Length: 221
Image (cartoon, rainbow, N blue to C red; front, side, top):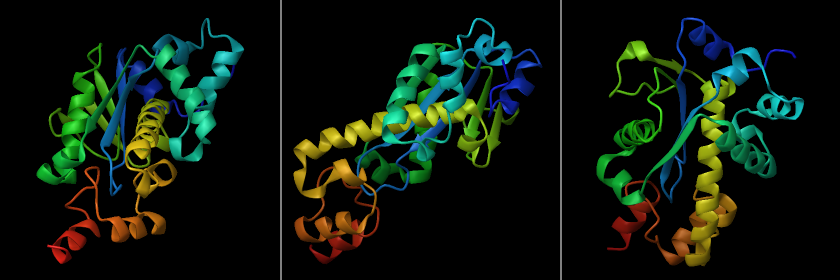
């Protein structure tokens, strides 16, 4: 069977004797509403390094793992289920809007990365991140890859699990906060979303420290 794509970082680490590599990625960092969500995933070394005992249909699903933004919602759902079933460990950590406002987005991102790794059932020996370094962990046990979700299967897997979780959450929130169409834009700053904020004002899910919400609250005091 051919070698899987997006595995060069993992293979290089596995060949040094490392068994457990965690990929982490965030979703919702730039959103105006809803939580920041980080996924962490440790994939099965035996499956990816040797492709041993991997049925062709399972190999095909591993080969389809990519940056979550490049995949259709249906494909993401299928792959998220597959990843959670096949992974050695996975975790989701979310930071609610009021904590993002309290700590700021940079610190909230750090807290979520750290929290997601702490929740993994297996302690990773190395961590792969998309761009960001995790300050709580030593530099030598992490690799920070620009556009990591397009270059590492483990980071891509984490991005898929996190995005599916957060998208589904925003669809559920839409049932409570119907005026904002969270099911459509998932809290991001679309024209329609900004018009709804202007018309109805922000709700509990909105990040009060983010523009244009901060200005709206100042103007409507």
